Image (cartoon, rainbow, N blue to C red; front, side, top):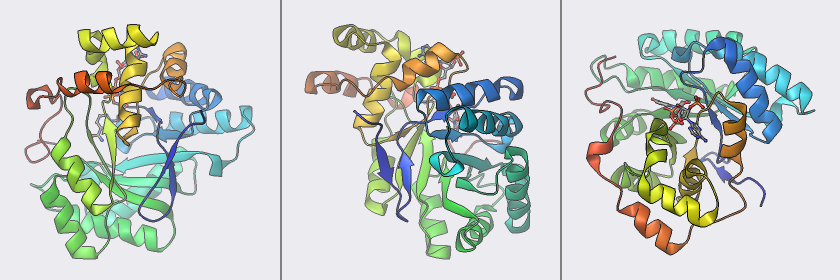
Length: 279
Ligand SMILES: NC(=O)c1ccc[n+]([C@@H]2O[C@H](COP(=O)([O-])OP(=O)(O)OC[C@H]3O[C@@H](n4cnc5c(N)ncnc54)[C@H](OP(=O)(O)O)[C@@H]3O)[C@@H](O)[C@H]2O)c1
């Protein structure tokens, strides 16, 4: 089975599975990224606040060369940090990310959080719209936005984000927000898709993994793919990076999906609620 791609609301193709890099230190990011490209990953997710754009950029250079790929073969996402929100500062921050990544464009630029107390996300979104209009970025989106934030930026600009990257894992399924995304032609990208690793110890997940002769991580990643979600598991270990990509040769059945559905509960949110996140 080849790796799947989905189509963004502006027609751009996005790989469904990519490598996350939060908590990947700058000096190990290059190896993680180049290992991932060698395994077949074609999407890398970073952010200014991860302080690893330099290492990610180096890993892209190394990995593209080693796998005889060109820049257009990979999809790179980075994100605007909250402290840089605002029209002019967002444009400056984009240039800074490009410089660190050693790229002349990224494929997807996201507003990392709405940070509603600052009340700058509409101005920041206008800056991203300008980058898109000037063809300096292939697609723009947001992260951690709730319906009210999404409605506000769409109303202000007429431009709907291509992606909303949100916390989503089998025990925190975000059904309502995902429904809103489907209605508005926004793709959902799952962050902390493995529940930051804790979910891999879950008995239901472990039993399904045993049944398919797969690992718990592979079952969880497969679940995201089958829900038509974009998914970006993170690892800095080469064997796990490979394991997390070996998910295209099996499928979950109706019984597995029914069992996983029962894990969903609001209490399983790991991160802060976007309305009250204090950063
Ligand atoms: N937009 C946002 O606000 C936001 C917030 C959080 C995350 N994200 C993005 O989403 C990505 C993924 O989320 P995440 O990093 O929070 O968590 P995650 O991908 O759910 O889990 C990562 C954890 O699981 C471990 N792991 C990975 N593969 C494994 C395997 N096959 N077997 C056992 N353990 C495994 C990793 O350890 P090792 O690394 O030691 O292998 C790490 O501790 C981030 O890296 C980032 O790119 C975005």
